[in-house]
Length: 408
Image 1 (cartoon, rainbow, N blue to C red):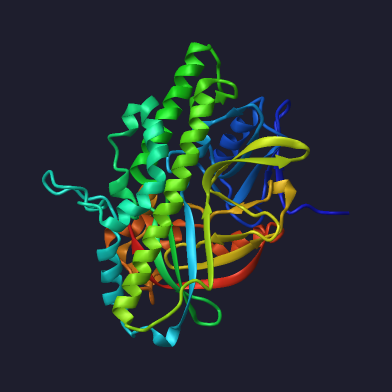
Image 2 (cartoon, rainbow, N blue to C red):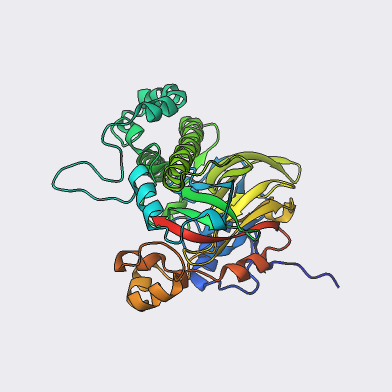
């Protein structure tokens, strides 16, 4: 008898949910949210839930939603194009200094991060005056942005250029890691920042208004959708595509600045193009699955086509993995985007002490204050269990352990 690597959720008269969650926590609220999405009539075949699955707004984080004829903006979310980038360098662990404090300070100086306003001054997580390098990186994005703003002027007054090459807050990070052979990697996680948030939020609200105007009842108002063939559908996909390009450029600029910080502090020549990955995990993609052209929405999930490289990070005290896709069609060629939360941010701050956080991040040069406890390792699922649950989706190519972590 053949056993599957996934569990199946199903309610009469709707599409099933295939969940790669064996051996990891999978709470009832997340299950119900997935079942609500599965009620939508335009789902193609089934919904795939990744092992890092947890409750999100509108759609479950760690879900893969294939649709025909419609798209759900809240299923993509507001951090459009959020994703990962990792670069392997020619450096080895022995070439790093005993203390990485100066390196962390230099990275934090070169990459704006966090969100702090000081008495009406600029957000310290953005650029005051973007440099010539930032302006050059913006150039390929400019025409598309101007086109979007012609129809949606509210996108204009956002932190767009000033956020290009900046980290953000929450679970976004920059890390220096060592792999199984003690090679040094730089890995980072961020998305489309303020402008992507504005775009995502705007189209979620437009979809909700359309549902009201058309008297469409939904199992959850956040599942408001935009039907194909409507004006908003074309505009939304165009805007998301632009935001995804912004997010990818954002990661490239941050990576360049982080590598320059590494060069300035170490004063050792090295190469950093040996192996690189740059992948989204909050995005929309047109793909072909089970004989149909479909729109695949991945919210907290990574494309894992056969041979495709991806990144699955753990928490700020755990391992991360560079993976190669196995092209499993039942997951619509997808895998998890990380470990997945088991505690909300509020819950983590209540349950985890600063002393516990310091122990959990031992050996990592990072912030060890109360403001980052919501990102502490115990707030996340064990990454080893997450990887075991998706052994039929990806194979591990490199195992990374961070030695430095910059948080937003």
